[in-house]
Picture 1 (cartoon, helix red, strand yellow):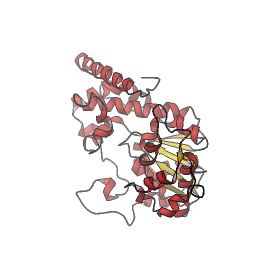
Picture 2 (cartoon, one colour):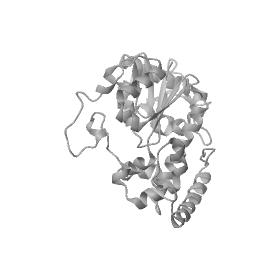
Picture 3 (cartoon, one colour):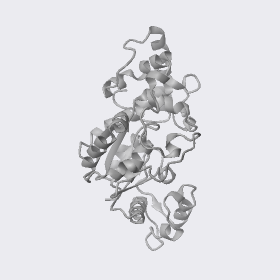
Picture 4 (tube, one colour):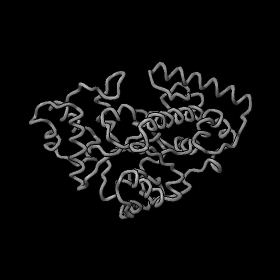
Length: 317
């Protein structure tokens, strides 16, 4: 079953941590993000083109991408994913890529971590009907704290017209949309193919949550999952937890102590209904009328921008 599982979630929700935990399991290999391949295969109005074919020339182009070295394939191995050098459907090529990665890692199962796929669960299920989806959800207020320090924010929430006026409210709406779409589309697949993890539970009770995750994936729990950092940790105070390969660490972001009260009020005015749905407690049950007017105006502009880009919205929007 290649691919076996997709790890998804709104960016800055801890998906890299989840990837490292699952990849440390002796039976599962998780590739890093695949934007560099799937973006090349997209067409307007669909997730992946169903009639696309991979030629030798395109395979060589993909191999030359700067992110290719994460796979550790030789140019010849990459080209051999074709049919004796002849073009193959892109889906067959991707399946072959997943299978080759699993063999290189010496593991029977292989999956992928690409956070942006959280909004494409339904389309990916059409392509890979047996693949499982693990959706990592994090309190959006802590996501905002992480976005503030992110040097790629302009490629995510920063792409929308409202970012310049109010990046906090824009991030709240971006988080609500991304996580909301993943939840809506994932739950439609049923509990056999879709599983939600809360970041807060994962870092507070990692062994228990990893055991439950393994039960969903149908593999035995292995303590190696929580030792993913061993031999890789770098003691450089200038590095963040991701780059320094620290072990699971609680409290890296805490909106209760790190987020100014006016920011909390604006965030909750923008995405409080989704916080309620997820069971995250609010600090402000009733934002002020002035804050609500501001947030509603930003939401209207954000929604118009989404529709102009032909991007989908969750039903509860």
